[in-house]
Structures are given as structure tokens and as C-alpha cells.
Amino acid sequence: MAGEVAVQGPQKAAGPRGKAKLSLWDRIMRHSDIGIGAWAIITYIFLYLPIAILIIFSFNKQVLNITWEGFTFDWYIAKQGAPGQDPRVIGVLHDPTILHAFLTSMEIALLSTIVSVVIGVLGSFALVRFHFRTKTTWDGLNYTKIIIAEVVAGVSTLLFFVQLNNFLDQYVGFDFFNIFQPGFWTVVIAHIAWNIPFVVVIIRARLLGFDKSIEEAGADLGANPVSVFFRITLPVIFPGILAASLLAFTLSFDDFVTTFFVIGQNYNTLPLQIWSMVRMGITPEINAISTFMMAFSMTIIIFLELKARVSEVL
Amino acid sequence: MAEVATVREDAGKHRRYIPRSLAGPLLVSPMAFWMLAFFLVPLILILLYSFGSQSVYQTGVSLGFNTEWYQRIFTEPANRKAFLLTAEMVLLNTVGCLIVGYPLAYFISVKSGRRKTLFVLLVMLPFWTSFLIRTYAWITILGNGGLLNGWLNALGLHSGPLDFMYTQKAVYVGLIYDYLPFMVLPLFVGIEKIHKSLYEASKDLGAGKWTTLMKVTIPLSLPGIFAGCMLCAVPTTGEFVIPAILGGGKVVVWGWLIYEEFTAGRNWPMGSALSNVLLLVMLGIIVLYIKAVGTEDF
Image (cartoon, rainbow over all chains, first blue to last red; front, side, top):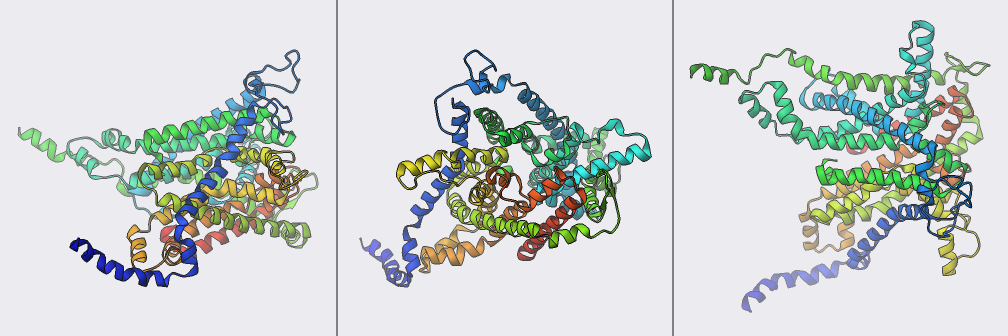
């Protein structure tokens, strides 16, 4: 008992002094933890409610999709033109335009991911492990690319491709199999440029946290530089490479603005398809496509979190 | 035995086929090439284009020093209106995200362990899905006869159609929704860096929660606040997809002017001039940011 009193003594003395100083705002904020918690919950609802409603409305019977009419799987699996069915009803899995756009998106995303990760890993190594004069230039260029509004990058790349193609046609006579004609390959090239800075940010963070002494240990034990890289460095930075690849893939797969400008007339990706459908009018089919796309992206990031702890890498 | 020992001594010193001074530039060269050719050169090209003249048949552009497009930008009232509207949009979006995001970032930063990871992940998840889809999702909620309209009518707070969709307000909702993760993540990093003992010290010295917030938390998280504001403000300047979807073509912003010149308008020099003004504004914001936090945090 005596001990407790002794401990409480000085605190009690400090207590009233502290309380007397509390201003009106301090008194209002006394239970602010509850307020902040409530605010956070509301914000999370704000973040997820539209997504939840989007998914729910992909099962809506109503073709115009304004109010809820009843539950159906039609927007996923129905074939168009079945007897007794509204002619506008078509399921994603039977819509050739959607499937074709999906394949194009996949091809572009795969190609641009592979190239951007290879280039980005080499670049990050150079930026982290070596010192050379132009280093800050490449850093600055990457960061600028990440933050500037995509519309500027999109239109300037379009202009560049058109100009380059004209130039090759007129003065060189060899147009590199027409890859700079706005179309599939221009999108791949632009997406690689869009992905590289993000890949570098992730790999670089991984390399900076890398204990170089284990590489030295490998070398001391007789490994040559190539086997040091493949047997020590690569396994250590592998979670970073995985995270970077999946991020690059999603960025490319979901990209709209750059793709829109550089794709030309003959190709179509999934986000472009959604854009034109949104502007023509809304049927639950768009919700069904969106649900597919979100499930796809979310599976990737959840997988990433479980396998590579991406929230620590990023 | 002696032979083995020699091998081991030499093991770390393999012959270098490439001198070390060249290895860095060599490794960086593919990235340097790609970013120069497909990012920087196009930016220089639009600078040249913006001073060019449009040919009569609208396919070619002759380069020169023609300031017509910039004059049009600064004299036409429609352009000025778009500029002011865009400035308002950037400001409101940034401030809106900060107000919504700060308490959330604080909430996450005082959590610990796996909970913290979970809450960060929950902010990041929407960021990983197409912003086109996330924007489109609001149509069902905000539209006339949509969910919000129905809820308000049911509660008796409003009767008849809401007329919220296809207005500036709907655009702001979409903007704050899409840009919130850009704000929350840097804020979280900023608040996270504050040592927890500082809160205890502040409390022990008799400060209430408000005083601690104003004198400890906010001042020490300023780098995070600046970073979040920049990451929100810079991309918003060129935003045209959200105004197009939720503003229904009635909200004409700077990015939309660029979009039109490069699609229906087919006046590429004018579009280039508009892009250059945008680029200049973005660089201005970045310079302000660097001035505010110093280069080492960039």
C-alpha cells in the first residue's frame, strides 16, 4: 500500500497541472480515438462500397442497369439471341469482341512485363551498385515519368511514333516491319516505358536492403560472378522481381490513357472496350467484365502479399 | 594441399572482362535508351510541334516558330475557363484527399503488426484495379434513379431526381475516390516515421490531444503531407477520364481539351501547345515540392 502511494504521488501532482491547461479543442478531442476509428471505417466503406455495388449489379436482370430487378447469371454465361431473351443480353464468355480484347490485353501485358522487368533489373543494379556521371539523370527521368499526367506521355508518344514512321518511310526506306505504325507494337513499346520506372522503384528498394557480405562470402568460397548472381543475388531479390513483374503486368493490363492514344485503329484492349461501352450506354455486361478484371488484379496482389509480402517491399 | 590453398586465395579475384567503370553505364544503357527514346524525345517533339503550323490538308505539320497556338490558349475565353476549372479541380481534389486521408493514415499508423499490414493493403487494393472501372462504378450510385437517389428518397431527405450525376460535384467524388490511395500511402509513411515516444512526451508535458496533433503530429508529418499533395496534384492536372465519365462532357477540363485536339479536332500543334502548358504547370508543382522538402527526400 505504502509503495503504491509513493508511486502515485508525483503523478497526482502532475495530473491537475496538465488538466488545467487543456484548451477547449483539447477537451473536444479527448475521445478523438473513437472519432478517428469511425472516420476510418466510413472511409473504408467509401473505398469498397462502389466496388461491391459494381459486382452486385453485374447480376442484375435489368438491361439498362439503373435499378435492381432480379438476379441472373446472364451477363456472364448467356448466349446472344436465345428464344425469349432480350436481344441486348449477351454474356461476357460468349462475346467475341470482349474475348478478343482480353487476349490482346494479355499479349500486350505479358510482352511489356517481360521486357520492362529485364531492363528494369539491369537498370536498378546499375543505379544501386555503381557510380557514374549520368545516374541522377536516369533517376530524375524515372520519377518524372511516374508522376506526370499520363495524357502528356500518351499524346507525345503518339506524335513520336507517327513522326518516326513517316521519317522511316520517306528517308530510310526500311520501316522495321511497320512496328512504329500505331497498333499492337507501339502499345507494347509505350507500356514498357510506362512500367520501367515502377520496376526500378521496387527492385531498387530490395537491392538497398541487400546484405552484400553474403555475395562476398559466395565469391570467397569460389563462386564466379555469374554463379554468385544466379545462386545468391537472384534468389534474394526474387520477391522484389516477382512484385515488380506482377505490378508491371497489372499496370499494363489496366492501362487506358497511353493505350488509347498509341493503339491506332485496328486493335482493342479490355479497358478501351470498357471505355467505348461506358460511353454508349450501360448494360450489366460492363459490370461483369469489370468484375472479371478486378478479380484478376486482386488475385494477383493477394497472391503477392502471401508469397512475397509486397506491402513491405513497396 | 598447396594447390587447393592457392585456388582458394584466388577465388574472389576472377578476371574482369569488363572494367568496373564501364559496368554501370553498360547495365543502365537499355533503360536509358528506352526512357530517352520513348519518353524524353517525344516530350521534346511536342515542344517543337507546338510552334509548328498545321497544313491545309491536315495531315502534315511544318515546323517553324509559330506562336499562334499559344496566343489562342491565352486569349480564347473557353481555354481560360478550362484552365480555371482545372485549377479548382486540382485544388479541391488535393485538399479533399488530405482531409479524408489524414485521419485514415493516422488510424493505420497507430495500429501494430498484422493489423497494420492489413489496413495498408486495404488502401492499396483499389489502387491495383483499373481506375476506369472504379470511376464507372459510381454511375450506379450517383445516377438519377440510382442508389443514392433511392436512399435519400426513402429517408425522406430528398424527393424526385437528384441531378447529381453529370455535374462538377460528381466529378469531385470520383476524383477523391480514385486519388485517395496516392494521398494516404505517403501520409502513412510520414506519420509512421514519428517516434511513438514523442506522443508520450507530449502527453506527459500536459498537452491534450489537440495540442499534440497541432504541435507534434502534423508538423512532423509535413514531408508526408507534401509528398501526398504532390502525388495527388500533379496527375490531376491532366485528368480527363473521370470528368468525361462522371461529368458527361459538361465538365471541360484542360486534359479534355488535349484529348479533343488529338482525336476529333485533329489539330496536333494546338494539342501539343496545350500539353506543354500542362507540362509546365506540373513541373512548377514539382519544383514547389522540392523547394518545400529539399532534394534528399525526392
